[in-house]
Structure formats: structure tokens, C-alpha cells
Image (tube, rainbow over all chains, first blue to last red; front, side, top):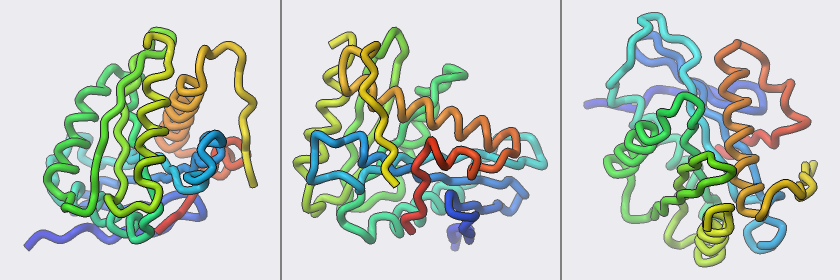
Length: 160
Length: 52
């Protein structure tokens, strides 16, 4: 039976895990409640999530299912606080944002449960495509406010 | 410590400001990690959190 990889906390800013093939991943949460000052009820509970490969001895892409399981496990710990919400932004520097979205959607589809909900966002800002998703618990006490805020920040952009 | 960013006049909406800030921070974090730099160097600019 496959299990998630063990992860360790690195300083005050991230977590790290290493796969059985020696690929090191760093995961980072960034808190953005301060940007949502128009939505007082949800401040301090809005985060983004990053995952980066920091060391890949084999220099090949990995289809290791345990990576997704590990991310899911990290999220399960994150959502132990029912007030937390996480936004995943698909990086677009290398124009692979849609591939990242597909991977993130796959992980969500495969490992989420009925306690969570995911909403997708899409915006074009100064000609730049920004693809995002927000995940939160269905019993989040600020459920409606959070989804409203997320929809609003995606709606109120240049091209809309 | 709050790191409130003044609303920039160049953006046409708060939504654009929020999303662009998130994307720029993400890209900066990616760059630092790939270059082996210490993320602590960004702590005055980015609110890192360890919520688990």
C-alpha cells in the first residue's frame, strides 16, 4: 500500500520531502489575509500554496503517485483548521500554466473528499493570463464570504 | 507583522492587484528555491506561514 512521504519543516517558511527516487520537493504557504482588507471576516486565513522541485538527481519528470498523496496529506493537515482557505496560482513564466492546472485538478480529483470544495478562477491582467483555484472546507464558517471574495478578485480585472 | 501593500494606481482594480501580487511572489519564491537561496531573505516582503 502506498503511503505519503514524510515531510519536515524547514525553518519558518516551508516544508520539504524527498521521494524514493531522490527528488526533493519544497512546499511553501504564503499568508495573504492582509490583501483582503475589504473582507474583514476572512483576513488571516487566506493562503497560497507553492510546490517546487529543488533537487532531482535523475533530472526526469516523475509520475510518482506518492507525491500527490503527500500533497494531499499536507492539505489534510492544513484543513484541520476549518477557517483556512488556500489559493493555488498556476505559474505562467514558462507558459505551462495549463499543464500545472491539469496536474493540480488531477490531484484534487484523486485525493480530495466530500469535506472540501474547489472553485477555479481565470483572469487576464495587463495581457497576462492568471489561472487559479481556491480550496476550502464546506463547513468553513466564512464559506460564502471567501468564495464571494475569490470570485470578485477574478471578476474585477482589466478585461472584465 | 502586517505587510500591507499600498494599492497601486497602475492597476485598474483591486482584484488585479491581489492576483498579480500572488503570482509575482510565487515566481520570486520559485526563483529563490531553484537558485538555492534562503527564503528568509524574502521575509520582509512575503508573509511565509507554516500553518501545519
